[in-house]
Length: 263
Image 1 (cartoon, rainbow, N blue to C red):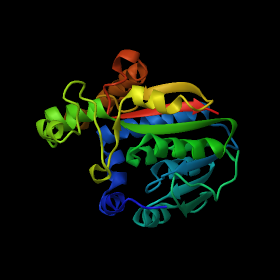
Image 2: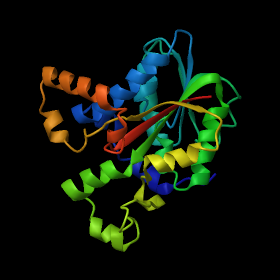
Image 3: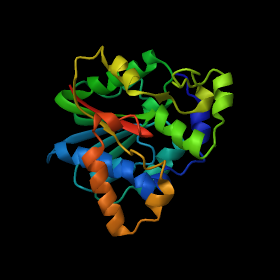
């Protein structure tokens, strides 16, 4: 299966651990872990597809769960192995989210797909990755699928920080001039979607959605304010975020979304 060299080159030089450790970056991690903890039970077996350097996998293994991880990029696997502590019941395998043939059907209680859908650029490939995640999950098990959301990124990277030129993206056909929906290419690295795109992708699967979450909400947009908070202020902000991250009127105002569904 062909590997996107843009992704490999990017992650060979990207510090994912640092991103999730920054206060504003931790909002996504804390939110995802909060929902995992809502459903996880002793004895559960977990598969993380696209595990990166293992922030989630190691956190769960250190809580005593059995974790298998799959990661595409060799550089990330090296860091994953260096981060493994004695006593963790964890494995890491190099592989592609679209082909989990090394893993049997109906094996896992919880399957995490927290990165691969960022880098799949058409509906067929996304459905293939989701289909594989569903296949290896037990009946009644849960899949956690993460996406990069276009509007949050457009507000943050486009209109606020101007790290992307919105007018140029419109000229190049990467942003629709009327709806402002985004289109991505492999060299753009990240596939930007909206909830209606996710709904359309998921419509073919016989699964039940349990939650759809704006997993970091406005955290990237107001990152300077969040990073300047003391512990008490940040705790209050997180209480607000948890109280509002599933409100329908706020679901599009996020840079990342988490779709949780049951097989």
